Amino acid sequence: MRVVWHLMGSMLGDWPSCDPHNFSKLRRADPSIPSRMMPATYHRTHSRTLPPPDQVITTEAKNILLRHIYRSAEEENDLRPKRAATKHLIPEHGCKQPRATSY
Amino acid sequence: MFRRNNIASRIFQRQIYTPAPGTSVYCARRFYENLVPSCTIYDVECPDQSFRKFTDDGQYLISFSRNQQDLVVYRPTWLSFSCKEEDCDAHDLPPKAKRFESFFTHLYSVSLASCNGNELICKDFFLYVESNQYGIIATSTPSIHDAAANGAAIQGVPYVEKLTFHLIRLEDGVILDVKVFHNDFVNLTHNMGVFLYDDLLAIASLRNQTIHILQIRDSGNLVDVRAIGAFCREDDELFLNSNAQCIAFPDKSKLHQLPGNNVQNGTHLSQPNQEDSLLSGIKQRLLSFIFQGISNEEKDPALVQFLDRQHLLIKFGSVDGGVSRNADQHTAFLAVYNMETTEIVAFYQNSAEELYLLFERFCDHFHTASKNSVSMNFVSSHSNNIHALEQIRSVKSKASSQFMKKMLGSLPYSCQSLSPSPYFDQSLFRFDEKLISASDRPRQSTDHPIKFILRRQPCSLKFKIKLGPEAGNADGRTKKIASFLFHPFLPLALSIQQTLFLQQPSVVNIHFRG
Image (cartoon, rainbow over all chains, first blue to last red; front, side):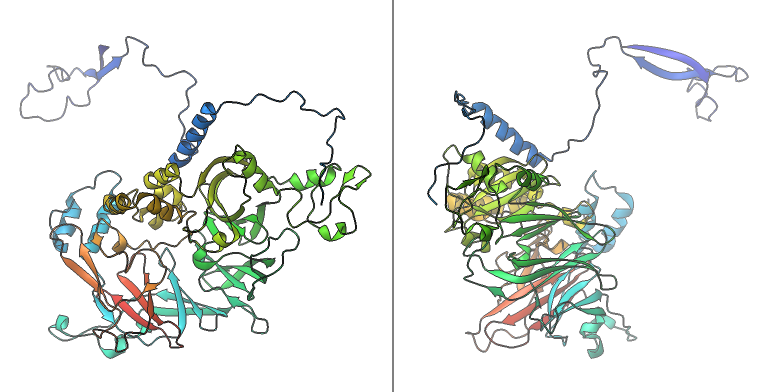
């Protein structure tokens, strides 16, 4: 990070202080010349910590209890082995048939 | 924040110190250590009514007439009398101040149950919509037991001919809207079968296995949002009706003449049976979720609560288990249901350790309080209070599995069943939870005074709640139950003692800060 000093109208230079040498960096020796010191600003020298350009910070809609419940359910689904689908998903007739029940 | 116990010192300190971030309510509450209901007016003369509760904002005291036909609403006020003596502290209250009317102003009475019919107010049920100051009261005809099932109803569940929910503006007692259920049953004891979350009301119909979701509009209308049971999505019924190949309908009276396998014009019809030919939508969702063999036993939705505006926690149990909360004999299941996607997100047995751990860590999220209700967000629980957590952990260490099942038996929570009074804040006071607690359920009365002891040093006795001036009952066999109504923020409480099995009027005591 690098520090940059700027000149600007003084915010502190004209205030009274017990020692006239205080704020010497902000206040010039000749009070008739307006001081134009700005506070230091800091500029980044790398971009490693930049947020993604499309980042939007919002509040999570689900509360912490529901987040835990969903997370447990997802973990359980990941652990559960998936069954292979049966070959004949669609019956030959192409439509649903009544079950043979004896009511 | 406060270094001393003296109230004047605390007021001076409050002028100087700022509470730590997020603790302003807890810091302000500590003043309740100094302002306690230490005086009691025993057996105050008051109308013979069933006092139900203070509303959570402290604006109203809700009461029902003894004949359970009228709603009576009072405004809590405070004593106003002056003492002109030199040493007023030594003087007791004058007799004219020791009246019910000194503390409560009668606002109005509204007749809800018709005296011609046989409807009565369900005196164990009351819900408060704090944002609009609306109250929800139920009236019903007597319940009929051993009723045969018909239609979608299940056998074994009692029913009432007419159950009415009244939405009332408590400011003036105007009935804004009603919702009527016919030939149905909802367990209203201590608000069990109904849950209010913000402006959404969930009503669990035991008989018809349906969860009705209603919205309370600001205009005062009760609007049907959806009914989860036979159908999960709003357009399921339309889809099933329009699809000729589907079997659906509960109107089995029209199917009596048809044999079982008759196929007519591509429409599949079946004879009426004891059980539904097509599982209702919610049960189908549940069984498809658990069909890997955990249980194939059919369970019915019994109790429900909101976890947020989209998610419901539904208890599925046997018919008997749904009418009571007794967890010991009945196996039940708890499911988290997403109303928008109509999916069962998670499913637990009522003794599941995983669910118990969630309950122990995130109890406050089961106690879903409306965002409009500030006071209800600060009720002590084992998730936000170390003393409450230590207490349940010590009990759990002694009998783990039974304890877990018992704790999970309280799910889904009964809505608005806890008092937000600071005197039940376990960081401030220690008290015997067997004798008194934030829960509004009546409990067995005791002759001994109930002590509230300061939690912090010097751990002194701050006040006692005593139910009678005598040391004990002359007749020790008389069984009495006691209920306590604490005002949400004033140092004011009512204790009501009732004698079981005898038609005696209840004894009402007023506890207040003198």
